[in-house]
Length: 121
Image (cartoon, rainbow, N blue to C red; front, top):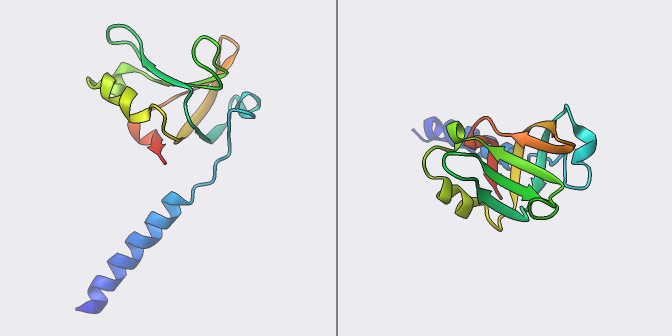
């Protein structure tokens, strides 16, 4: 019986350790040089805000909007209805964001495809 429990427990611990051990490949200092690349961005947002109506939620890094150097964008189809909850969840927290860096009007950004792409550390 113990052997039957040991294998799933060992597997769960291994998966947990590998998920927590993800290496950051991007920071606010180097993200502009990574446009077009899939990265794991790590940092603490300078500001988090929801735009008007059903617009996106923005995590701004390297300064507050409009003086930020990098943004993470969560469009409403991903954010869902609790946009204010997302602002609270990510404000002042170190995050890890998985995604492709794109250029938007001369600034790098990641548009997340699911909320699972953002992990609070």
